[in-house]
Image 1 (cartoon, rainbow, N blue to C red):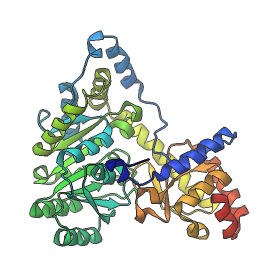
Image 2: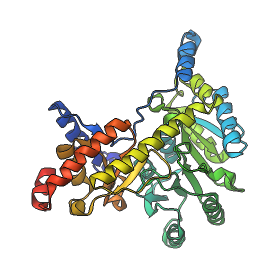
Image 3: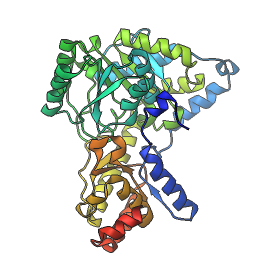
Length: 403
């Protein structure tokens, strides 16, 4: 019987239904092309692995590490921010290493949220943005996930009508799942709004290095005054293909960083020291591997948009991130994103993430990860083409297939 207060507040994990169906199909021998989870398939660059291997040979590195990150790692992150964004950070008081950005968000929620506190969360959004605060006892108010006028209209309504007043706004650009991007003018408006109303901003910048245009995604901390109200979360998972290493950062406002560091000091001793040393090596090293990774994702994106379009599924080309946010084809929209995702596994041997898993306003879409090579993406397109051709317009039969 699930009668624990915090787990009772969590809805059923939508993705688990897709994962079970995927596992069942694979157990039956199906070759499922998995584009559902944002799990990078590229190998971690060799020089980073070499640094890990070198460091782990020293038995002194096997002892407890530092919860907020070893000094060299925090300095490396500060140096990265200065090179990439022109933002100066004090590594002692404005940088904390986290066990991935997901853990950073969850523990920041624990650090700053009192029962009933209102947090403004984009919908659709990466689940931890909402549920980290829900587990901490907060209340959620959804706002649009796109960086346009409608978002500021929603923010203004929230300040007027939320009781108590919101404590924080969550941002994520380049966005997961929608792949939307934001510019510095948008961040300037957000910072002005947040400072006026004394609301913190928590910005997720995990996809800062996965972009396909000429202009790199900016940091909110580039805006004058942002350091007064904002903390930004980044991750090495996508930038350096290090998802299993669990290495991320929170940087920015000293008061928020101190609160996060204090909570973490009670919960963990930080990542394994060799991982932290290797992560510092990644941040201090050449950008060549980042450029190569970006180019691979760009080629995959282009193959996806072209081959899926030829198969009969027109998908907008994402400007950034390792995802495409794909509207469900018209003939299948009545099924909803969860049933459509199930049917793709059964009928096309393709796994995607249902949009409803990212919030109610994600319905009507699925998220497709660029985590298979170009050959496999084309194979997925062939499976989709056959499914689309065979499906026809028998919605009743399709509904049964997805059940």
